[in-house]
Length: 145
Image (cartoon, rainbow, N blue to C red; front, side, top):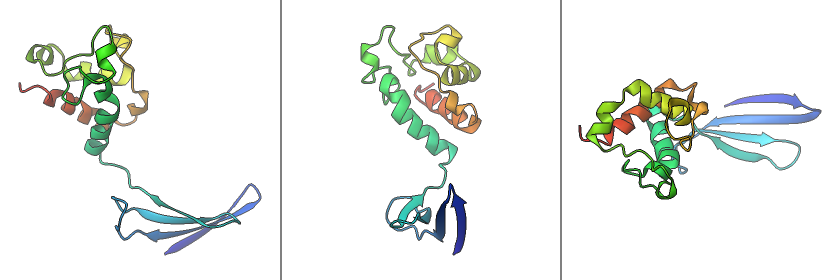
């Protein structure tokens, strides 16, 4: 166990870090107890996700809303859009775009590459090229080739 003491804006902050035992809560992590002069608060800090896991989470939470869980462009938000979201399952579309183009749409959005401006960009992923690469793999996996 290691401990730290930090003075923060005139208040004393004491942290006690303990390695989590991996019990309950799904991913283990490091248990951090913070005392701020009131009752101590414990939280579990999660380890960063692997790029493939983060990409999967993003695909499920962001992309599937319009493109659907199977990439057909039939997500709950997508059915109301005009133009409709891209159907990733067609061989013709898959052959018509490069990985670099898919990556560009993911990062910059449709409007930046001459597609629908309704497709938002994901600038928060600019610093995560491995996650974007995994998202491209997910888009490619929707089509049987």
